[in-house]
Length: 156
Image 1 (cartoon, rainbow, N blue to C red):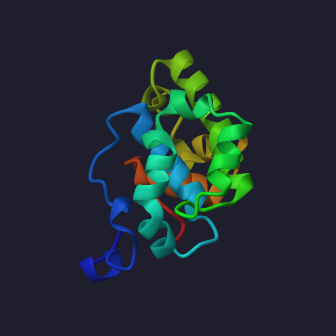
Image 2 (cartoon, rainbow, N blue to C red):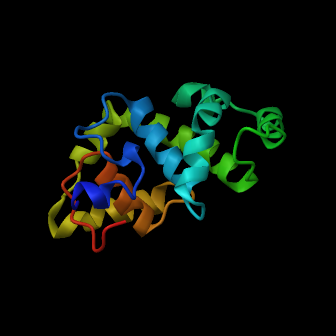
Image 3 (cartoon, rainbow, N blue to C red):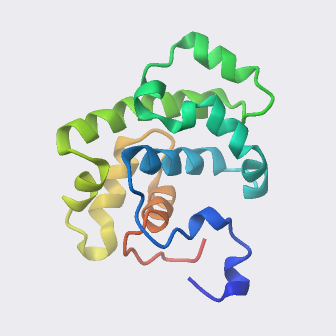
């Protein structure tokens, strides 16, 4: 990924050194990328502890149970990124994530079940087609951050 100087230009959470150890950690990274998209990463970094608290530490089951009342609560919370589309996508993605984990045993098992040849093309497409507010570029970044051996077309 580059030299230490190059790494300093990116958020520290991008450099995990290992795969996440739970589905909730995989989900939190997905959510962070959704919040990150279109914003300077410093903004998200400054608000992250408040965002994490407001979203129940990114517990998949808790977020999958959020209602319209929770969306309204989040939209008035000045400590979070108050983008209704991103908030609703995170709730919907929690439901999808929960179903994937139930079907495959874990999200890691789901990822491991893919043909990863051709630089993860099938995985990137599946993630972009499955999750809301995730496209090919953000899917590639996600795979990189969660420790998959994907070769980005460019350094993010």
